[in-house]
Image 1 (cartoon, one colour):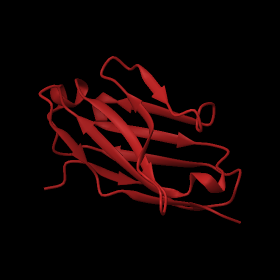
Image 2 (image 1 turned 60 degrees about the horizontal axis):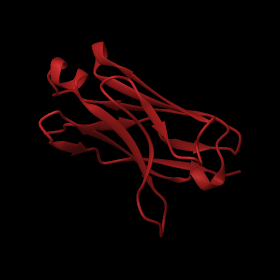
Image 3 (image 1 turned 60 degrees about the vertical axis):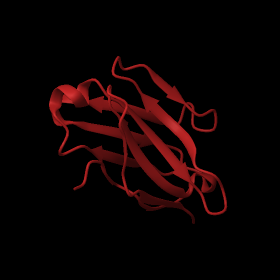
Image 4 (image 1 turned 90 degrees about the vertical axis):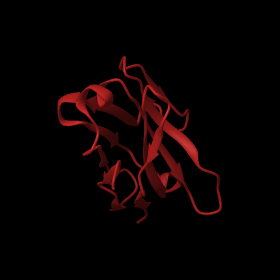
Length: 119
């Protein structure tokens, strides 16, 4: 049963934009609204790293490498979280994962969506 589903990855040229989406189709709306959502990425040969997260109170946090270029937003009514990525660089190439951490402590991971930034 899919708890978290990412989409929106693809191939883009440097300087381009992509919007990643993270759906939580099976989450109860009230639980989703109270959950913290994070986007992580893992590049080939590198460890997984936090890109951005948004708390239930809508506080956002970004990795230094993406500040000013990426924006995370949360739509509770649709149980969706988005990661708008602008001015993409080759070093942003990675598999991007969405996570949902519920108030009771359970954390769900998606299977990832691949982003390739290349000319």
